[in-house]
Length: 98
Image 1 (cartoon, helix red, strand yellow):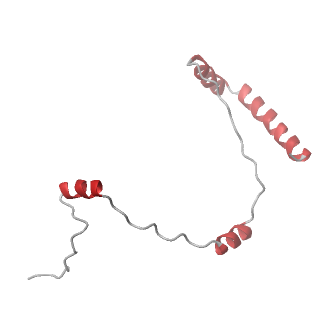
Image 2: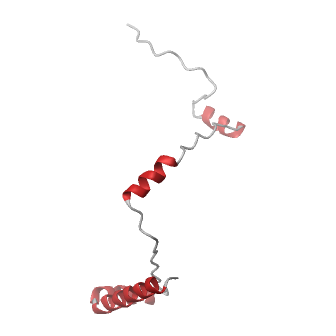
Image 3: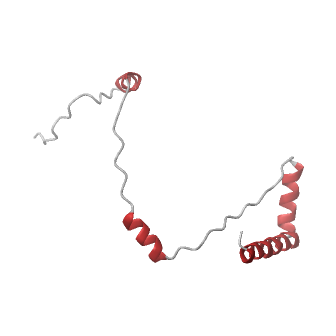
């Protein structure tokens, strides 16, 4: 980890701990969690910032995934038919009858 980033994260950790320690509501909630037998861990994720232009460029180069093939097994077919659904039946045309 870069020394500058490491220092920034240590400063953030210290600031968060101070803010938590100064809040009676947070302190009470933490104590409730501890009494229940749990330990609270807070994880922060840190990654390089991507500008909107970088994200748009990445999205333009990505190819859409093809739709997965539709497959149904005999068990699924039996369940659907028991519900009155027959996916193997040809669809009727929807013409209006008057």
